[in-house]
Length: 276
Image (cartoon, rainbow, N blue to C red; front, side):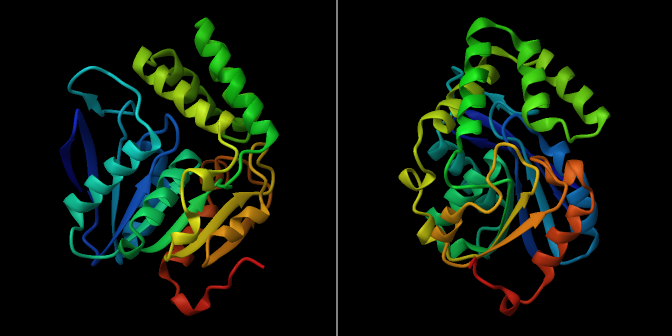
């Protein structure tokens, strides 16, 4: 394993590279998740030998550090962080991406902005349009942040879309929320505005520009993502996999989901079927 720190604008971005395979797979964190959320993925994908698996923390996550005044990042700025990490590690080759939840939004935006750079794209817990339940949760979360009721914010995350996680992950989430800094809460608040107010991700990102072989993996029991949203057809070459009995946190809830990821990243491109 290799650990380094990359300076991107006003931030220091920590990253880790596992294995020494000929291809690169970048894991893109969700909102307030860190590199630790990909442990199972690293164990499976790096061990297979094809990929170097790259983890990193966005600003206001994990060990990332602001070098100046703390200001929330826009989606465009987060895409630029991902671009900088990709260019630092794999400047002259196509790359594979896997993103979960908000990380899937960032990964999709990168793949649309730099279509020639991405060969395979896996989007977990992803839909182009926020449904009514997600908008309600986002607005309620913003209200709790405004009122400083952070313990209740953690309980809202767990009860509304994290109840399928094992008990130790729920306890870790509560502990994490108790240590959130004001700039981290502000980042969550601003991302909540995008979720609550944007009518469609297509208003921000041209999903039709994605050229990568794409798999969308959604949980059948996810309360804030419509597993088979017809808007997924906006991605030209995309396939949908719905995982039974899984909620929003996919492989954290059902570890066997990692095998779906593994099969996608190792199968021939010709197997792909578009979303019907």
